[in-house]
Length: 107
Length: 116
Image 1 (cartoon, each protein chain N blue to C red):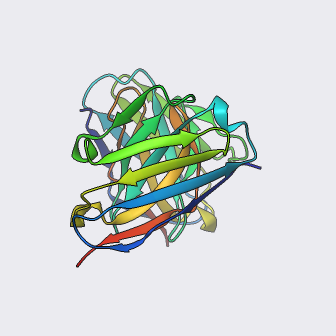
Image 2 (cartoon, each protein chain N blue to C red):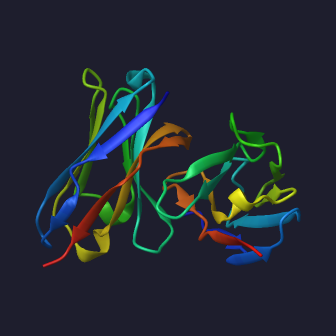
């Protein structure tokens, strides 16, 4: 199984700041990487797919990059609504596996 | 607008069975693979099973193989998850998702609690 190691586990940042979240795959996943945002009590929402493609309706302050085994999600100009938990997903192989999540808190 | 509405959850004793349903609308259901993803209380996300657009192919995580069955009825635009021999570790919110390799739309989730 492909292991997805996500870091950091938690993050505290101020409004207007830029943050990055990383996912490291245990083997090459060929850009088959998606990012999700989940708010408490809600279902996950797709932000990014194929490592860097922005899902329709997602603000352009979200961006994804990476290749091979290393991927990152960047959020520019943090807004209060960005407080949430973020997960990565590898959809290269079965079983599909998620990163452990990053809880983003706004100061 | 894509909508996925799960139903069928609740409290069930260990070793018993439960069947979840997911009613889909807002898209051509028969054109898409579908999947179930679960999330134990205060934990991360865990993929459970995927079914192809026509039901001909299914995939399961090891811990549910032989106990869970994913199926679909394209005439009713409905996805199912039959869960047998339930264990306490199956306790989670179960989400129905549409598949495009990744999971692009998710339902609101249904809670399954396995406890005596």
